[in-house]
Amino acid sequence: MKLHDGAIGTIVACFGAFVAAHARTLNPPRHLDYGPGFFPLLIGIGLMGVGGLIVLNGVRGGRGQPLFVAPVWVRSGTMALRFWILPAAIGFYLLAVEWLGFLMTSITILASIMAVNGVSLRRSVGLAVALSVLVNIIFASILHVPLPWGFLTPVSGWLIW
Image (cartoon, rainbow, N blue to C red; front, side, top):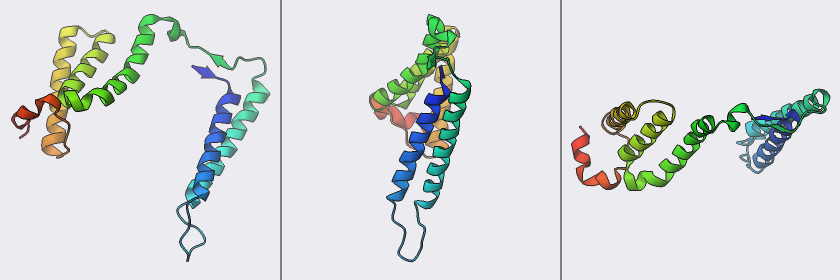
């Protein structure tokens, strides 16, 4: 996806203005002239400056260009599916992980992503199971980070060492 430089510069400058405005709300301690908002204020000012330069560059060199140009892959159903599977997987994870648990959710997501990208179904399911169990062992047993078990809670002790 290609946006005109004028649009991108405007977005960056507006984000910089938001950061700078929010930084001004952070009160410094009584004994200092600067506080927690000092560096975010500098970053916001820098973003506004860079955004303004991008807008100027777009205005000078982008006359007659469209505001938005759709990439080639948007017209291809397979390529669009390969792109949209990732945001869909993130949304599915957020909605399903508490109920299904990490293992079942990650197996479903990994197998789906691999299958959409051309890996055979048998291989994608096998790899998804192996990778999900490995990640679960690393997080739960080695790093001691609790992952949700979902409906597998009664058997969760079998998969943690």
